[in-house]
Amino acid sequence: MINLVTDESGVLLPVKIVPGASRTCYRGELDGRAKFAVAAPPEKGKANAALIAFLADQLGLRRQDITVRQGATSPAKTLHITGIDADELRRFLTINAG
Image (tube, rainbow, N blue to C red; front, top):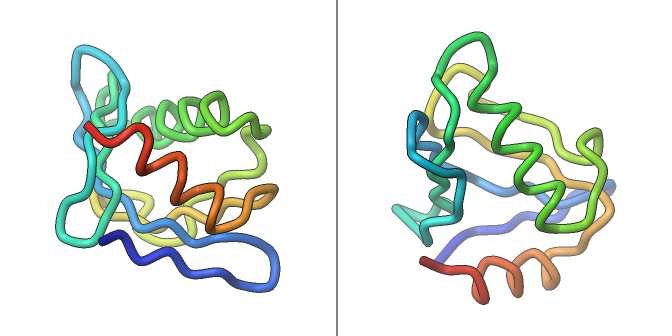
């Protein structure tokens, strides 16, 4: 189960990104993290930007509503998402599980 944490300004989402995929998509849960395949290389923040763009589009948020809180250069990272609550985010993850 993905451990979503709510703070005073949003939700913390632990993620695992797999860059260089043929398309960007949500692939389910892995070791307590939301796993995403990202169609961008792991260089100069391109994979992070692709993940943020994908999530913003899928959740109906602005890109600036999603930031990398921890692990900017690691495949395992924590995103901070504002404009959505934990229940809405969990619903999205459940409906779109690969």
